[in-house]
Amino acid sequence: MMSLLALAAAAAATPVVTADCAGGLCGYPVLKPYFEKLTAARGRSGKPVHILQIGDSHTAGDAITGAWRDMLQARYGSGGRGMMPPGKPFNGYNPRGVSVDMSDGWSIASIFGPGSQTPHPPVGLAGFNLTSTRDGARISMVAGANEQFDRFVVCAMAQPGAGTLAISIGGKTERIALDAFLSRPECKELTFDAPQVAVSVVAEGRPVTITSWASFRDTGGVALSNAGVVGSQLVHFSRNDDAVVAEELRAYDPDLIVVAFGTNEGFSPRIAPQEYEITLRTQISRIRRLAGRVPILLLGAPDALTRRSELLSNAPTATPAPCLEPAPLPPVAPVAPPPSQIAPDSIDDILGELDAQATQTVDGRRMITTPPPATAPLLAPPPVRQPTQIGWSITARPLFPPAGLKMVRDVQRRVAQQLRLGFWDWEARMGGRCTAVSWVKLQPTRMRGDYVHFNSAGGQEIATRLQTDLDAAANAVR
Image 1: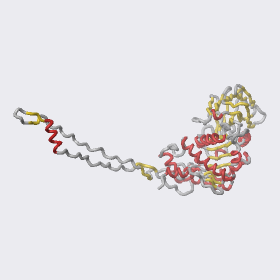
Image 2 (image 1 turned 30 degrees about the vertical axis):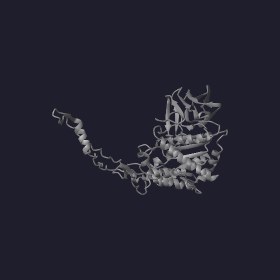
Image 3 (image 1 turned 90 degrees about the vertical axis):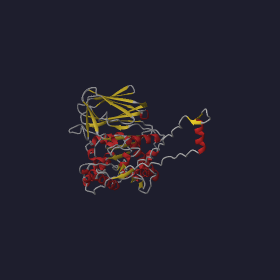
Image 4 (image 1 turned 135 degrees about the horizontal axis):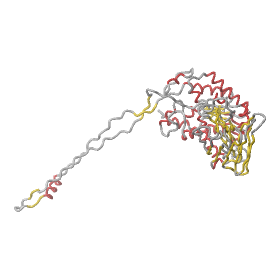
């Protein structure tokens, strides 16, 4: 039987390409405008190809999007870090490619989790905003060597009684007054003749609300923005403000929008397929209305597992079967080899040894004065230990994928086909159902012990498999 590692290796092999699918990527012809821009991205000037991914913790953590960003920028050149939530919107926020800092004096609002209580100022694509609570509150960003920028964008709310933003870059400061007669979102763009590495944004005077910021390098290449909120579902994306999202999409001008929700829906206490389908269709239509004719790639929910028995029936579908897990087999009794046998001495050897130990007496007789040395006891060699054998079995409290996760994935696949979206079967490209077991328990580990989230090695693996399918699709549409 093929091992799980062999199955995973097979999943990473060259994808099979048909008229509609390339490996796990189906509906790829709708992505042709993105492929054409990407082909022209290398070695040219002008704005970079911009990928915008919205999603949950898989997106927020940047393990996958960060690896994908590094891969594309190594191939096509860096177009900057892209759009980010302003400041440090949650504990543990650690974006790749840049370092960010934030003083006190800010309140944080979000579409989900802490800060989501209403009322709060409008939220945009990032899923977070910052509102200053004191004069002089500051956020700053320092770009890594590969993410230097020559264009900086900050999006904020212009409204009656708002304060001013002081933006300092390259030793120069520009102020943006946000006091306005009517409330409206406003994105301000600053450009520079030379690459920059640091920016500081300070709130002056009365309160200001920042919805996002971004850094780009207009020398071609690729920028990949990850806008994720930990624990969120697609329904929570509906809580951001249409006007803010529209203004940010205008300013950030994405060439591909990646929608990556589904895990938290699949782990919900209860999920109704009709309600989820309505949410998915509504939000895809909304994105199209606000973004225009930008290709959309929908990522199917990945394989993820739980031991919580209530999730066996959190959706009206078949009860999921348990997953096999690796466990050591009972030890085999060690095999002891037969004791070593030493060949006996010949009679001549024995007589010679006795003669060497004899002394001469007065009457010419010879006698033994010292006894012959005792023969050392023979030690049996250690028993041969058998290597530990690993078997696969179902435990008393087994792992399984929640019933809702398959339901979500089935709806995603069907709606993607009907609405002409690209659809990537994340679960299949991991290796299929229950693959998370081997990604956690076998070396090299690629998922964390919760059987849901990916470590850096897993993020690299997912990004590689996604890009492999995208490359195959791009070759097919040329």
